[in-house]
Length: 112
Image (cartoon, rainbow, N blue to C red):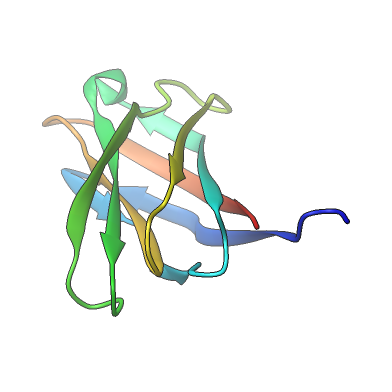
């Protein structure tokens, strides 16, 4: 049997400055997840920024899961964060340095 998989766009054309976050996504059925972060536009020292995965039991109260990734530093660059055993809700939160601005498309790929 083939594993069930799905991809959701959790952020599209959002511009992040200082901090940004994706929409929460309910993913309790999945065993593994990958956030793909694509830079649609990047200005300033974006490459010094990081994104971190957060988990939640209810989509309201969030805690850092421990996985992080660098943010894409230039237009059309892609980075990713991979997680397993994460509970029910997932989101990605980014912290950008002063003067950085990042327009993003974030996809969440899930597999059972």
